[in-house]
Amino acid sequence: MAKNDDITRREFVEGTAVAGAAAAIGPSFMASSAAASALSSVQIVDGASEVTLQVNGKPAAVTVDPHVTLLDALREKLQLTGTKKGCNQGGCGACTVWIDGERVNACMTLAIMQEGRSVTTIEGLSESDELHPLQAAFIENDAFQCGFCTSGQIMSAAKVIEAGAPETTDGLSEAMNGNICRCSAYPQIRAAIRDAAAGKG
Amino acid sequence: MQNFSYARPDTVDSALSLMADHQGAAFIAGGTDMLNRIRDGVSAPGLLIDISRLDLAKVSKDKKRLSIGALTTNTAIAENHIVASEFPLLRDALLSGASPQVRNMATAAGNILQSARCPYFRDVMSACNRRDPGSGCSAIGGTSRKLGVLGVSDQCIAVHGSDFAVALAALDGTVQTVRPGGERCSIKVEDLIRLPEDRPDEATMLAPDELILSIDVDRALAGFSSAYVKTRDRASFGYALVSAAVALTLDEGRVAQARIALGGVAPKPWRARGAEAALVGRAPTEDAIAEAAAQAIVGATPTEDNRYKVDLAARVLTRAIKEALA
Image (tube, rainbow over all chains, first blue to last red; front, side, top):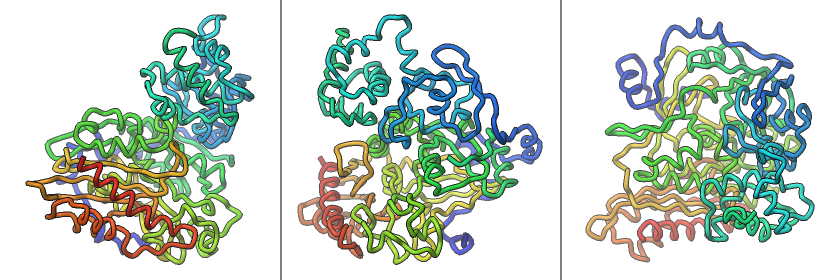
């Protein structure tokens, strides 16, 4: 690219004199000549490899190519099919799981990128044979029709409740904006979340 | 998804070395833009260098600057107390974008570097000069309702989809970068994303082996009255049709400083200096605000499909200025 043509648009910060000043305000990083030795320790994974995750509290090893998403690894390798594949592009939320306790779209990350991390799926939401209060509240409120989005809705809603569910309809809808329901059961979904948040699940 | 090799370096140095040694490699962090591009066949990196575990995910400040580590998640920035107290505009812009699930993964630098929004860019069956130089532009003369009206060219009319970058452009934000060998560079966010002109394939100012370390904002701009107003086709979780970021200060009833940028209208975050000049030194009357709004859209070249964006941009900016003053 014609990068040199744009040199006047860039403020170059070169040399050790200013590198120190930049390091003081930026994230810690020291330009060093140790790059070559550091490289030797980086393994390039080319083809299938074993990736160990912590899934629903237990270690789970899967053998996957680098391009396999976390969603596909959960569904196809670990047979945890409660997590659904809807749009497969981060737009619908049917694949919502928790990674290290944060809700994410399992279709938008690679299994290999999550090596060693803790993954929770709908199968691991309730720690006993009893329904989780949100699951019970969804049934009680008839908060689904086809049910395809439901596990994602519930995994997302649990984090909304954990953070303190917004009181207004708009606020709750915004907090749940990453979970689409094509049957449009939104009023019932909001009612279920409110019930579970109030301990009525 | 096509296959690729994968590496997860644990230092910036080793990430840069890997990039220097592997042509066609790409960095991946949050992955929310990159994986969709690979799935759609828009990008085909031979090696993905996973930088997501590098130690670049902190928000800090010194006397002069707020510094947001490149790998800080959108959620972590939005929840950061320094950001909330000094630059609520950044928080408001971030929270207007995507969903909590995506914000939990998407990183600061990845958000800014997200690829262009255009249905033809994402569809490999369509002509696209940005994806396939010289192939033409299916958007021009095609369906262009959501596409650009400012800064576009006869080669490309895509828009940039980042709300965060719009707020950063208004606040004169910069990215601090490094390349193999240690060369460092500071680039204004406003300049980082290039206008398409006759080379829409050159999307950013970054060299292929250049890595963003942090995004910095001058704290002299902290505490400005600000607002981020965004319009979209649905109430939430959508790219902007038009958005406006406004930060200003008043002195004895007159606008002392004004920073304004628009989103959803151009191939990059669009700084509206004409609008700023129309406000500075004047009392923010209806007339002054109307003049600023008119200045913001000077030079617009809409298509039949997206002509509405010109008027909408003026209205969104008018509302944003009023909200910032309220």
